[in-house]
Length: 173
Image (cartoon, rainbow, N blue to C red; front, side, top):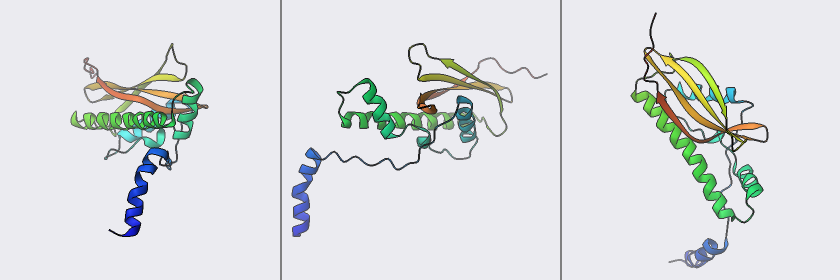
C-alpha cells in the first residue's frame, strides 16, 4: 500500500469521530406563495409521465436547523441533520407512492378534472396546514391529502401524502 493511502487510512477514524462536515445542500429550494400554488404544482407533477422528485419544494437544511433551534437548543447538529434527511425522504417517498398508486388505478391526471382545493388549519400548530385536492376522472372520484409547512411567509411540502378514493361513484347526467 502506498504511503498516501496508509496516511489517509490512519486519518479516517479521526475524521469520522471529530469531523462534522455534512454535505452542503446544493438544491435550489422553491417555496410557494400560497397553498393554491402548491396544489397546482402537485397537480402538474402528478400529470407527468414519469415520477419526479419533490425535494426542491421542501425546506432547506439551513432553514430547518434555524426552525429546530427555535424550539430546542440542546439537540446536536447531527440529530437535526438526520431529522432533515428523514423529513424530505418522507415527502419524496410518499409522493412516489401516490404517483404509482394513481397509475395503478389507471387515473390519468391529464384528463382528470380538478374539483376543489380545501385548506384545514391545524389547531395545535399554526405553521402546519392540511390540504385536500379533490378530483374527478370518468366514474372515479377521490382526493389527495397532504400537509404544507408555512415558514418565513412561504409554504413547503411537509409530512406524507395520501390518495383516498371516494367510494361514492360519480353519477353521469
